[in-house]
Amino acid sequence: MDVRKYNQEAWDRQVSSGKNPWTVPVTPEIIVKARKGEWSVLLTENISVPREWFPPMEELKILGLACGGGQQGPVFAAAGAQVTIFDNSPAQLSRDREVAERENLKIETVEGDTRDLSVFENESFDLIFHPVSNLFIHEIRPVWKEAYRVLRHGGAMLSGFMNPLFYLFDWDEMENGILNVKYKIPFSDVDTYGMERLQQEDRPAEFGHSLTDQLAGQMEAGFHLIGMYEDRHSGAKISEFSPTYIATRAIKP
Image (cartoon, rainbow, N blue to C red; front, side):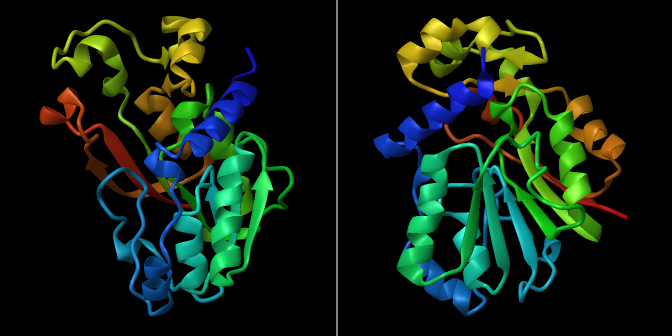
């Protein structure tokens, strides 16, 4: 299976349906506030990223990694940053261009695989913003290595990802409020439910990566982890007992 191609097409359909909140662009009101310095963004579902995690925005070169959808990128651009959005979904990238045209913002969009950032030279960016998205790729260590390469020394990478415990449970039962441990980590939608079901449900394939790959993977790529917080998945039974998202701040020394 070509995971990248399948998820690219699945995300394009998510945009067309308009039902996925991660595909809905920011409003003009949010851009007006961002231009005044009043802004916040999400790495995970509910908790805003601490403002102290960001350097001054003016002329900051930001790579929004797997960050399409017309949400965070336009906010950064309105706040004064030089923004490049890199995403696998052409339709998600079109959301950023839509907001850029509507608000007279300069945003560069690039389509590609997060495991391969060869279109960018070494040390091209001051900040990498990588919201919850690596659950849609089956291997993530190449992502960390490429991110490290294109980030300048002293720059930061802000990342959000799923706590793998979310994938331990039978999803059908969890929707009915029952927590039944059934699956192992690392988790694969493709191996567990199969392509036929994914196609019937018309949703992207997800992968639950180990904390070793998520955290040690960043450190082995060369990053120093200097910040972290957790967040909860809205509406999921497991969130009553444990956070389901993790956000990290990492520095390239």
